[in-house]
Length: 257
Image (cartoon, rainbow, N blue to C red; front, side, top):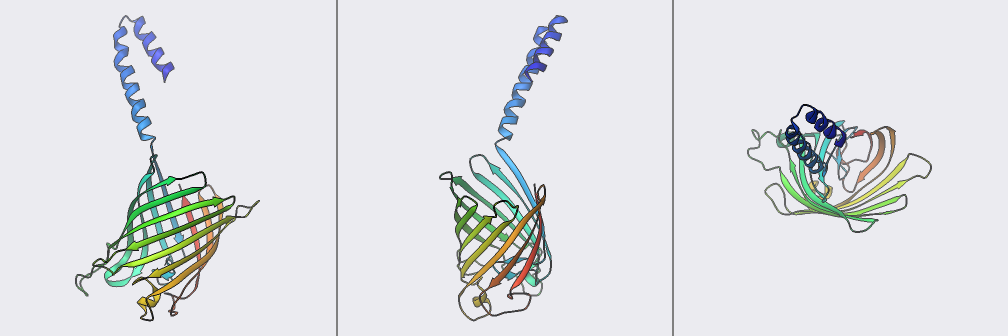
């Protein structure tokens, strides 16, 4: 940029109008400031095709494939906003789409420890209230987590709590996620264990209790660029309902950018 400015000034001097270079210089400086401001934000996106959409162990696509995707905008300060959606088979009044919007803050406490806090809002915009009337479905859920790494091992513990709202009574979710990159290979293993206490637990839904666990183990392999494939085995505590709460093998084809 500096070279172009000097060339412009030299040409201007040759024609005897040295002051004409001043507006161009000011515009270039203003553009540089704007570019520097824009660089404090980063945008990322993701899209995935899954053979079954499992939410905390429960199938929200009734065993069928689902298309998912999201976008995140992150500021250098650690604040972020984002949205994520998935096709579902929620029936009336949930419809065929789950759309989540969220905002939060993440920061590193040390080289190995990161915290993340935020608020998530679940929406079901394609729901139909004609049959059941005005049935509330949307709800808020604050969340917080702490993540750390030990060489190839990553560990996260987190909590999500939805207070009593029109769509549901208070619901507590505790979880831990683990990842392990196999040395010398592109394969990454993962494990998850979650505990739900409230109306979103399978025992509560089926009338057999108030709380229960969900779990999964899986593996992911990058294919090319941001493209990767994965497979996981998912289970949940409670009565087994085919294509809803039964154990399942879930395949994933995802792309991040």
